[in-house]
Image (spheres, helix red, strand yellow):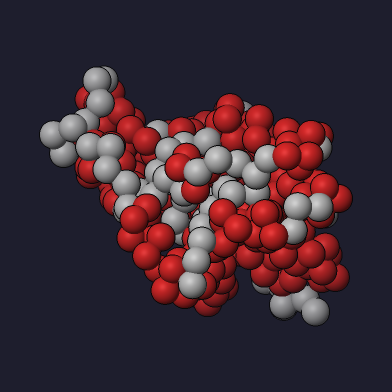
Length: 304
């Protein structure tokens, strides 16, 4: 088990600080103190001061397999938890005010209209709708699939690099959601209807969003940003599998607008931010991956 305080841990620590700062605003939620303490604990643990390092080494000696697994995978376990707190944080800052009007203005200037309202109406074809809604749902496969494939191949150092790139992409988007919240067209306009609404993948996509979406998490689109980043991760570490990821990402991006889930501007900004974060992660000399044991693989050259 590598000690706390490595790049992914520090990234989580920095995010805990920058997002937790929202709790200093007067509209913070009931129970904010507990949430602030959780953020403070994440900050301290991520920075890895010596007492935390000693505790990590002790845990590694006592339960080596469990400690190693948890330290490798905890960032992925954090993703839904961090997502769920976003409405509490952005409301603390902005008191329920969202910046959809700003993004709609960009949409009008760039596209001359609102594609999230007109695309499905212009092409109300059920097979196309089902394909794009299924592609939109592939987001969850794109989050976890590349990491699972890399780790299953025993390439632990590459796994850590891939997780670092993924988490950098997530936290960059989540900071936008805290400090510049946008609801997106799904909250403001009717969903595409008619025969499209009878499709099973249409219904499933809407059910998933109703069950677990966080208000204010539209711009930039983390669905698209993460999908783009994972496509680049897949190209670097999994070779020709990137073609599958790229195909899913293209369908996901189109489905985000077609289904009325995101503004087209969200999609463009998410794609740019995802590519930028992945590029930064790949070029970061301090990124994780230095071999720390006999099961570590050497740094990989870009595939493809």
